[in-house]
Amino acid sequence: MQSLKITPPEGFEIDKEKSSFEEIVFKPILLKFPTSIKEIERRFYISGFGKVEDHTGTTGTSRFMTDNHVSTKERAEKLLKFIQLLELRDAWWKVLNWKPDWTDGNLTKHCIQIVKNKIDRVAYGHTNIILAFPNIKICDDFLDTFKDLIEECKEFL
Image 1 (tube, one colour):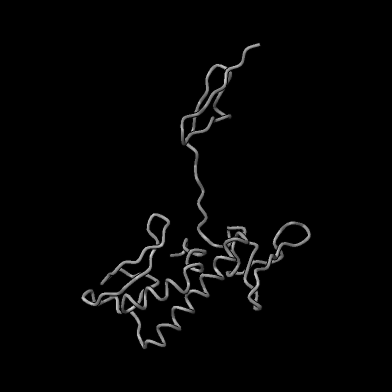
Image 2 (cartoon, one colour):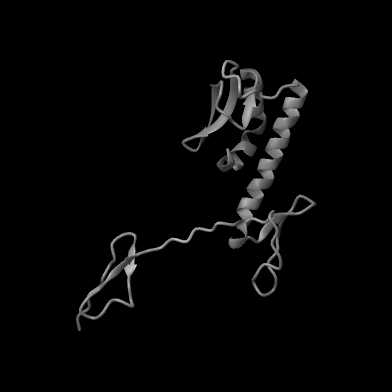
């Protein structure tokens, strides 16, 4: 017995309705992207006690979803750390009585960003970066103090 395996070109699938034994017809794969957050299955959230919780019921489906639910436990844990990082940044800004003015490209801000998946320190005048500081010493101090936290949630930076 011989068999023939048909592999559709990338981006296509076999049109089973229009194909026959003698002729294989391909059709483009139609991608359906969600257009609302409600179309995405999301189980995890950060509770009022700062814990990542799973809201899957005994049937394996989410008992309820709100806009603060996310799809994976890992994402929820990283978001919790990201929130903490933003709060720490804001607390440092408050001590400094400073907030970056991104409309003034002449004022240099010293920033921590992710480049090629590695933490990097750069100076910018007009590019909005989440972790920005008024001088290099403060930027370095923040990086040294919170490097582990930055590393854990760098996908959001």
